[in-house]
Length: 79
Image (tube, rainbow, N blue to C red; front, side, top):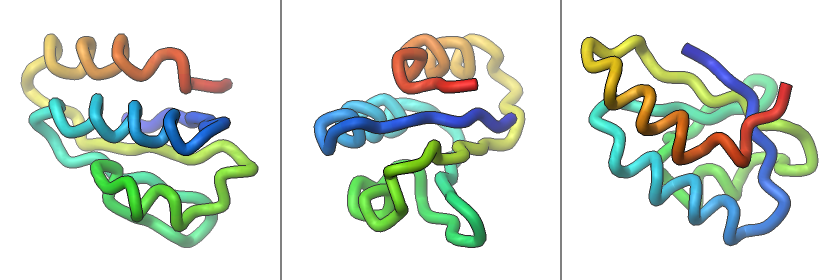
């Protein structure tokens, strides 16, 4: 699955990563051709955060975990 998120502050990045760390699946974050670990504050901060960041993860066999993760990060999601 993939979504776009927007971070306005470094606290937003920290909040996102704290939510990502609870997910039982791997998450990547990227913009353009740069892809980093979506569970790494330093990785995400190394991206150009003036634009939305693409977040991806493999479909996980636990829909409850994906739903819980989406609920935690919904304030960062942009269309």
